Length: 398
Ligand SMILES: [Zn+2]
Ligand SMILES: [Zn+2]
Image (cartoon, rainbow, N blue to C red):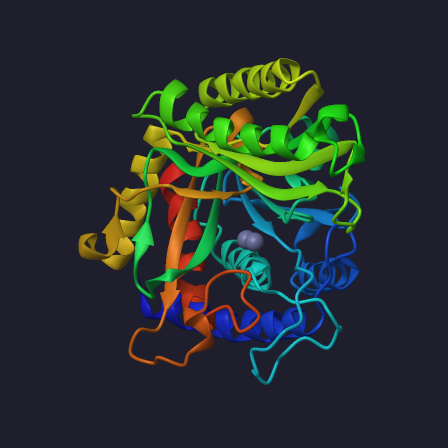
């Protein structure tokens, strides 16, 4: 990279790092990210970058045209802007000022690096085509990506491909993970109800005990993973809540309600899980004279990288950071990410950027995502701006 470009990158990094700290102090969750939205709009206005507000309430789309747009090509970058309901315990100078809310997933960093990319691309414009930057609300369970798509994001901004990253405290700073195929799992929700017949705990023969039946269901559900899903496919079924009874020790309750989550990397696995869970719940309940129902709610799609786009991104990253630092073989995460929704519509790539500081054991950058002591590592901001700009220049060459 030339000195001019390095200086530009350094000055932009300094400016957006300040933004990051401001965002970190003023976190908001799902569709309430007014502070972030205002800050993004203020910065884009200051820099003379065109943008449109009101996507999925607090979302923003910024647009930057290259030196030429004769290629007719467009690409998109997405950054999420929302925080979490966590009481911050990081002890950093820029800690949250909003009680009970915290940027514990580093979306403050994602917002800042996307802002930095906007500034960098608008200053350099070293590409032929158009770049759209999607500042997306409500990633943490609110499905902001889905909502932007439903509102017509890709009709109004028909990008050819779309890209995003996540900071990764589980790997050291410098590590970049880019692979084709699944990188994050789908996340579906389960609500299971077993209705029996309540009564006196000393007279079980007069009752149909939903606690015993639901217990059998919990164990039997694990056989779906072990015996039905192809062993070479990944699937997780976790029952996370088991509710029955009133607190009294002499009453058999009428109903037991289970909640859980199902994770996988393909719609094939989701279809099998949904079908078998319903059969197991209904069948076991029926065998005991009770009624069992399973509601299977499809939430986030798996995040599936397009192999050709992943190869392009890995190539860009290897040029920038050296091939030793760019990893293309690693196990996908069972976590979920609503960027998967965008990748169902457009080819693209989701990459992970290590942010851990192994030499500094007490660093807040080493704590896992969603931990109250976690903090985004500002040192990876210039890496990601370079990466996004690199993808732009490679996909939209002059
Ligand atoms: Zn998160
Ligand atoms: Zn996140």
